Amino acid sequence: MGRNADDFEGFVVSVVQMHVPLSEGTVTTRPSRNGNFLSVTVTFVAESREQLDAIYQELSDHQRVLMAL
Image 1 (cartoon, rainbow, N blue to C red):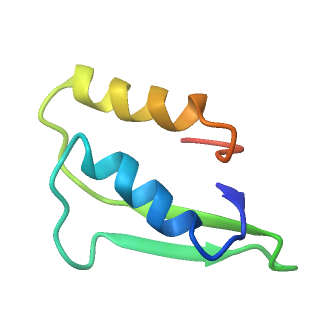
Image 2 (cartoon, rainbow, N blue to C red):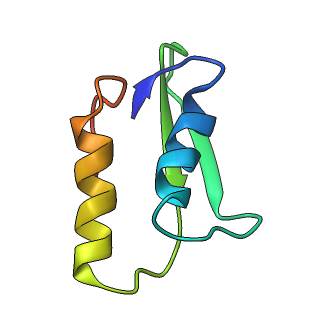
Image 3 (tube, rainbow, N blue to C red):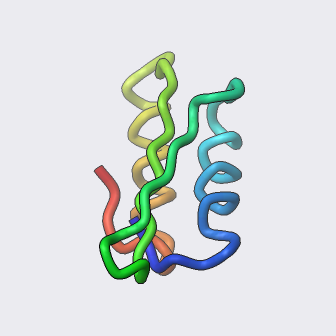
């Protein structure tokens, strides 16, 4: 989840794609009630715990990401 900016979804997708290939239909978004924030959900099958941890860490460390689950 991060601030709702035109490029936030693309940013999240690009980070995840560095670690795992994504197919069409694996990304969904949902704006907050007031439209200030955007939740981006990326569905994929991780190949290892290390891969999942690397994606989580990279997203969590970035200043644009307010929350990663």
